[in-house]
Image (cartoon, rainbow over all chains, first blue to last red):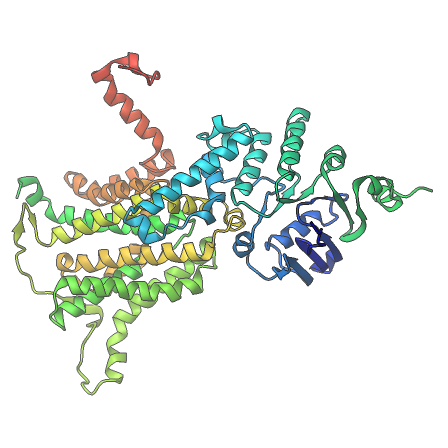
Length: 259
Length: 316
């Protein structure tokens, strides 16, 4: 078979985002190939979360273009971007605290449900079968994260690490082609981090493309095919993880300049 | 007609109307919108029916349908305009809407006469209001024929809310109330669902207003003042905003309490206010607080099953 050089899944071109006079993102450009795991690293305030907010449509661009499978997605509202297949988690976990774990995950499967309001009100079969499918898919996801025993617990009762995992399950229920994870291992202990890394590694064998913001370099080194380094909103390096590790600018950004 | 019903028919009617109004505000509160437009939509419903019944001599059922459609048609563009507002800003904007409706009813005739040949034409009848001639309601199956439509309307409203509550729509509404940003990143069109709920709430409020016409018989602007909007909010706040049972209990208690306390004569309003104040302080999640239900269930289960079943759940 001829290996075709396919278009990248996500193209980020000259993306700029100003907050007042401050540029949180300054002319950032890079491509993410389909199926890749892309690590997004950089010191605090480097613009990593802003980049994810911009991709998922929560923060509008000041300049530049973002394309998903060749189609421009900047300017679309967040729910439209979700419809295109971009899922995300949040750095400061944003679960629906009063809903059960299962309901949280089922929220992610919402776009796959077709029963209309009228069908629901007349209690027609389609809305009920859709609901059953959603709950099966969601339970399956929870099982793959070893959390099915927590399905009926309300989300606010969970530990920090469990909440992060539910948020990942919720984003996966969207069946996204691109999943943006904002510090998925933050607040987890080393066992939980190892389990999560293993889970993400298994996940990467599917067709899904991942973008991960992470401070834990072991996680980045283990998982990523590609690492992008941001500092003060500027991309300072891009490449495979082992190359990034030795780059002088990256070391400077993290540890400060050598005299 | 049973004696209890015939003695208290007026209270029963108002309890039913207020339940429908409580349900209408519950809908918007369920997505986290503090809308006080319900008194305005109620007025639209009431005036529409009053005008159709007295001026056009058409039956109540046609009036009801037109009233609900009209309220929905007004709610849709108004909702598009104001639903971007949050919290207290939305409350103020929707209160303004209620005032616009009320003042239109008060002074609308002047405007109508500008465009009419007949300089004595009256549609809204200003501050005096529209008065329906009194006819003794017929009793059908133990209830007056003025009560039946409201009872059915309340049952249909409860059915709609309970069905939504148990479906994905209930989950979506709860998710929007708790974190609309997170909901939007899961593909929820937040604006669309807010609008849907707002229009549905307006339709229920207008229906309640429409069916109140044969009961109050005098439709004047004073019925739909600011205080009315606050009363409706109180049904949901006192009853509880986490479940649709809340506004039902709230509306029932707040409407029936003054009647129950009638024996207190002059002290009635004081005790009434005190009870409301204490329940808000000690039951912040409302009378439909799940903890109260658990308590009621436990008390009821003690004489029947004995204490041994408590907490085990598995029993013969």
